[in-house]
Amino acid sequence: MGDVLSRDALVQRVTRDREHGLTHAFANGCFDLLHVGHVRYLQAAAEQASRLIVAVNDDASVSQLKGPNRPILSAIDRAELVAALRGVAYVVIFPEPTVAPLLELLRPDVHCKGTDYTEDTVPERDTVRAYGGRVAIVGDPKDHSTRDLLSRIRTLIEPEPSEPPA
Image (cartoon, rainbow, N blue to C red):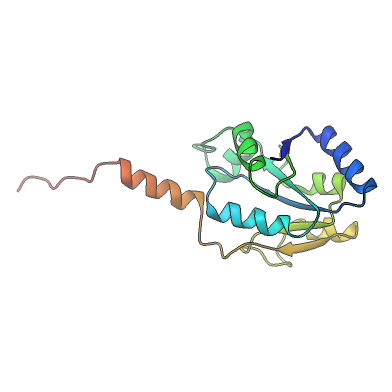
């Protein structure tokens, strides 16, 4: 099981890992209601280096990105769930609109994004290239989403509209 860490504690772990010759992959996301697409993305990211760091959006940034009724789960709950996945070494919660500040601070060897991106559309690609890292597109096709999962749940719990009397 991975560790949910503060930013300062994460910097210390990454520094210690590097002293032992370990490399780091970095992935990020909201991870609100984990689904198989998240698992496949993170497992593929973990294959890119010795250790996988996952940055989880805080609650305010999820609301800004996904709407006022999100997140479903709190940031700490989402972080604990992600940390429990095989291959995840470290999890950190971040409040910024992008992970660029974390990337600059940690300088992971590889920044992993899902297949809804290309190397040219990754928002942080210039940040990663500037410190000598690389970008990797990992995971399966983006056929899964929390939005779709929530829609399916709604259809299961909301009653079908009845026909009006004739």
